[in-house]
Amino acid sequence: MPAVHDRGGLPADGPIDRSDHQWEDWEHVTNALVGVLRRRDLINVDELRRGIEAMAPEEYESSSYYERWSASIETLLVEKGILTEAEIDAVAAKLDTEWER
Amino acid sequence: MSDEHPPLLHAERSRRATRILAIRQLLVEKDVVTTDELDDIIVRARARTPADGAKVVARAWLDEEFRERLLTDARAAVGDLGYQLSHDTELAVVENTADVHHLVVCTLCSCYPTSLLGPPPDWYKSFAYRQRAVIEPRAVLREFGLELADGVRVRVVDSTADVRYLVLPRRPAGTQGLGEDALAELVTRDSMIGVAEARSRDRV
Amino acid sequence: MGTLGFRAGDPVTVRATEVDHHHRTPWFVKGKQGKVRLVHGEFFSPESRAHGGDGLPKRRLCQVEFQQRDIWGVRYRGSDDDVLLVDLFEHWLERP
Image 1 (cartoon, rainbow over the protein chains, first blue to last red):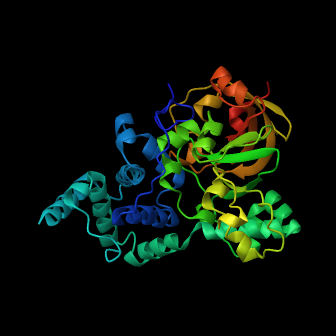
Image 2: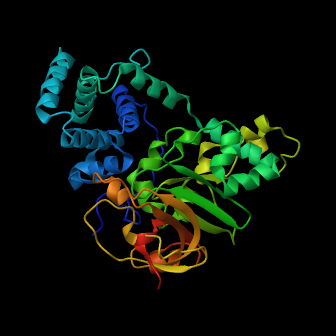
Image 3: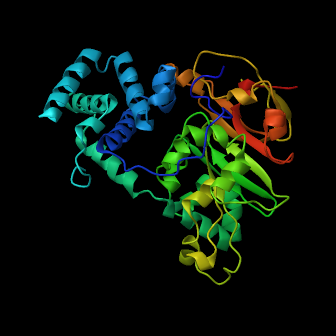
């Protein structure tokens, strides 16, 4: 049974959806964060992939591309002690409150 | 950025989106990253388009020496045209001929030559493409509208590691006398991934 | 490493090992035989760098060509001449 990211040759239903979505702001931010963190040698692309591959299979499959990056960035920053889950929880809750207003 | 996009509806912002925005805010507060650097990367990422790859292809069609160099030492060849590849990935160019057609995929993630093509299209990152391209490339090509002639071999390239692959499509017939810019117009993103051929002159 | 010294034209078999750590060898080539088409050069080992290591020693990265029929058998829908190229690190390759 291949790992969830190892997808070559797995059965696929139906045609390839060729529509492109407009990038949302947070997707640009995610992409740029990886760029800066790589420049700073705080994360590398192999770690980023490992963080993605560590996602629960059902979460991997139901997430969009940059949602997977987002999950991996969080895993790595917490693992390296650069941020804590509690800090992220607190700011995320605040952002959600502002968002709902 | 927000002036270029309509504000998102609440229901559209996922948990992961909120968390990455929280992470961004915290990293800026802690001086791990600066907003200037982030903005700089966003601007530069947006500036990269398949037009860069198209110029490389057009030059290869016109300049035999450049073509040979591109196929054997792609980094140096595109460097001559002013394109800087990222320091940690290499570039390889595979050439379509009358006998062999190349198709590029990354089954493990979504490796793609962004330095020359910009960000990959969504379909390139889709499970359907990653799953199907290696086992039924001809069906995938047919779906993209490309029916290969009998006797043409398909060579699928799974870019699993540090090398990014660009396809050098065949030069369309009837393009003698065209200059580099006119030729570059015929080179589509899809033709450099290998799911299409370059446009013929009458279809520009 | 690098003692195996694979060169273009060498037949190789991909190690059929299942590992839990991050690695870049797709499942469908494990245990399959192919032929080295070219050697790209040496790169940091992703298996080390993904888990906090320094990526050393660098590993030679080989572009290996497989016959599609050898990979997928009758499931492959296409010509018997169709091939698949996969970039594989040398420590995943053995002489058959």
